Length: 310
Ligand code: A3D
Image 1 (cartoon, rainbow, N blue to C red):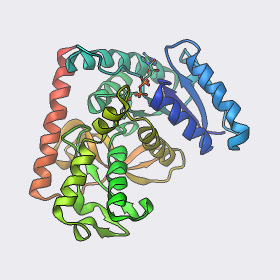
Image 2: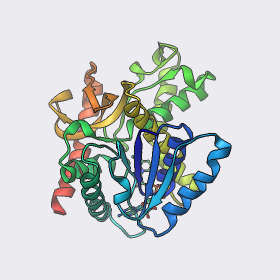
Image 3: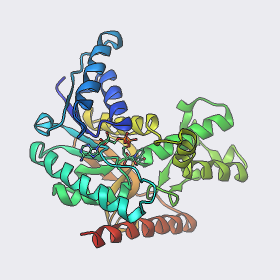
C-alpha cells in the first residue's frame, strides 16, 4: 500500500484498530508494543487472515521504533489502566511518562506524521503529545468525540428503531462525564431528534452516552471498551489518508475558538491530508456554552495536574 499507519500499543484498542485498517485496505500497518513478541504475533495472525479477508495490506509487528519510519499517521494507544489503589494523579503521571517517551521516538522517525491520540486521560495526553512532538497543532488530535457521538447514534437508533446510517450526532467537550452531547444538532435523516423524542427520553440517552465508557467497563469487569474506540480512531485515520475532509468531533488545540485558549478539547474539525484543516465553530445556546465551559474547566484541571508532575 502507498500509505503507512503505525499503531503504538498493541493491546485491545491497538490490535483492533490494526485489524480494521488492514481489512479496509487503507494502508500498511505496523504494530508496536513493549511486550516482546506480542505485536509480532498479532501482526502475523492478521497476516494469515488476509487471504480469507481478501486484502493486501502488510501488517508487521515490532518492539522498536525504526519500523515506524515514515508513517503517515501514528495512532497512540499505549498506556496503563488505573490499578487498585492508584490515584488519578498517579495514573496521569505514569501515562504522561509513557506518552512522552513514545512521542519522542515516533516524532524522530516520522516527522511529518499526523498523531491520533487515544490513551487516557485523553485531553491531557494530547497536551503531552503536542509538547513532546513539537508538531504543529493541525497534526496532533485526540479521539473521543467520534466514539462518544457513535454511542449517542447507536442509542438514538435503538430508541427510534431506525437505521444507524440515518443518524448523526454531535458531542463536544472533554472526554469524561462533562462531555456535551448536543441534541439540537443530532438528527435522524436530517430531522433534529428534538422533534422526534420527548425531552425525558433525550435526557436519558444523553446520560447513557456520557456514561458510555463506564457502562461497558461494568459489564466487562476487566478492561474497557475497544471495538467502538478502534472504529472511531480508524474513521479519523481514513478521512486523513483519503483526504476525505470529513467533519468529525475530535480533541483539537484551541486558540480562542469557542472562547477557549491553549487547551485540547472536543470540537468539530475537518480532517484531510494535513490533519485538522479547519475548526468548525457552531452557534451554541447559553446553556450549551456553560456546559462546554464546565467541560473546559475539567480539562484545565487535568492540565494543572500534568504541570505539577513535571
Ligand atoms: P490495553 O489492552 O491494556 O493496551 C495497552 C497496550 O499499551 C498494552 O499492550 C501495553 O503493553 C502497551 N504499552 C504500555 N506501555 C507502552 C509503551 N511505553 N510503549 C508501547 N506500548 C506500551 O488497553 P486498551 O487497548 O484497552 O486501551 C489503550 C488506551 O486507550 C488506554 O489508555 C485506554 O484508557 C484508552 N482508551 C481511550 C478511549 C477514548 O475514548 C479516549 C477509549 C478506549 C480506550
